[in-house]
Length: 511
Ligand code: FRU
Image 1 (tube, rainbow, N blue to C red):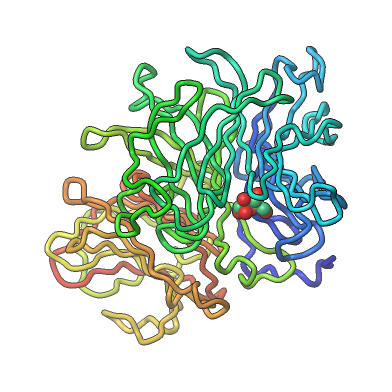
Image 2: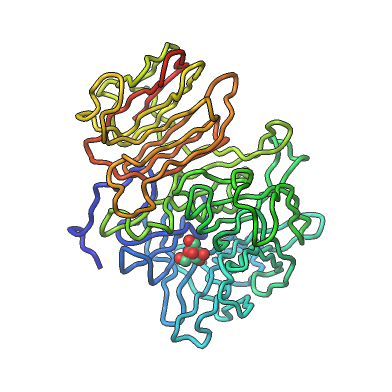
């Protein structure tokens, strides 16, 4: 166990949830109930690397400020508590609460330890709470669904109400087979097989943490698509862990994909960019959505890390944070539905902008911004017209002592570069010189996404926190999420234009 003195808090984020102490991975049991959002998560209560998997717990009323709660479901001698979901069992179908006090029910994966009679297997189990999530009791009839499989995990459960009837649906994975398996239940206790989806599209790594939900297209309730989220590791678009999604229909039994590009285990790596990706950076994994959110909003959160190097990120005593919460929507673009993501914005109530620039010609090279707007926790909104110039963009978390040379980068200047290249149509986030990158060979990276200009413009919303950059391009049509570990003093910002002919349309910084 670490004492406060062991905690290395240089990179502790302000607006991204991290456990006070010790290790965190996947978000679990995301749920809204009685005015409170619950965030459970994969947690090691006894160490700052993966192990002793238990469900940690935090609560929030605004999805921005989280209060850590006691560990909700601890591991024991027989089982580790792997990822899963939670529901409000409003009609007390499970009988684990009462009609007047319906239970919260968590559906998690029992990963049986070597001491257990089921050693080596993974099956689905329940725990329930009748005191609004404060304490949890494991169901005496666990597991509730067992396929005698070593790789059957990460159940996401929702209430289906459609042409086929009304019942609980579970989506889980046969991870090694790259399959999503669906089951139904009237009461959360007994489950019946429905169907299997996959393998399809990205299949290099194991499939983990699926989700399935329906969204209107352009807000039209009579035109919907179902979104099947499949996280995989490795084999994400940027390398290592990543999240893909399929769009299609769900008839209560089977998910029919309209966006399958390649099928089978030998899916074609050269077509990766054609698949649907939740994020194009390295650090957005195991993303799943909240259940029971008022107004039908679909809110997701991801683990801001990557299994390639998660054990080695430089923050002793605590390790890993969650992404900001994102609202996801479907909109039509070019005649087909696509996913848009918008972050719940920590800076929304900040009435004044620290800096607001209007339309102007961009000087070739670097234009350093005034020191007052430098910082390690901020939001930037920027719109560029690249015109005839080469790359345009923003230099983030730069070391001002190294970078004051007008016009360009000095060799080895510490900074993270977000740039749009009109020649390739790609937005890139380069963290190769972002600070401490040497703790793992896979960490220094340039992550890219193709995004078309709209009316000749690229619009960017960027959230910088102490150890991360999250970029939302063209109103959330594409996102890039990456961790960075710069020096405290690397807080300068600069505009970048390679060559003449680019315009800044607008630029604003809020702290
Ligand atoms: C995904 C994952 C899940 C599993 C959990 C264990 O990151 O591997 O498949 O349930 O983490 O911590």
